[in-house]
Length: 97
Image (cartoon, rainbow, N blue to C red; front, side):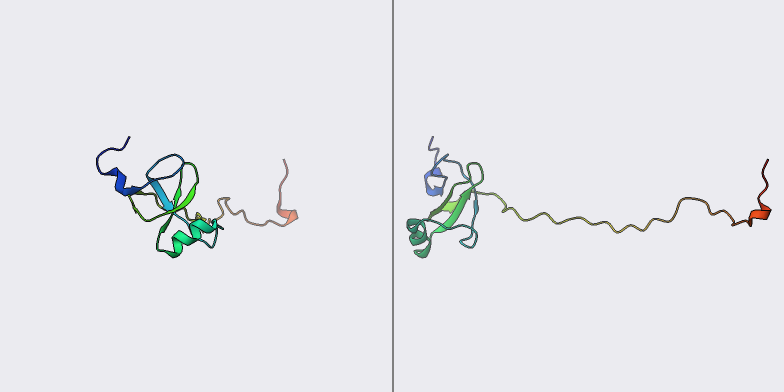
C-alpha cells in the first residue's frame, strides 16, 4: 500500500488517491479545523474521485488540472444563399402550358 516514498505526498483521507486538484474558500465553506490548517499554511486539496475537500502540508504527487467553465465555441460563418436567383417576370410574361 505505501510504496517507496509515497508517504511524503498528500492523498485523499477518504479514498487514499493521489489525483488531487485545489479549491478556493470563495466557493466552499470549510470546517473550522480546515480553516485553521489553511491559516497555518496548508494547501487546500480536492479529490476528483470522491470530491472530498481537505487541507494538507504535504506536496501533491499528481495534480489534476482544475475544471474551468467550458468556453462556448461560436462559429460565425456567413453562408451565401445557395438558391439560384431567377429573374422576376411580370405576370404577363409568364407562359403557362
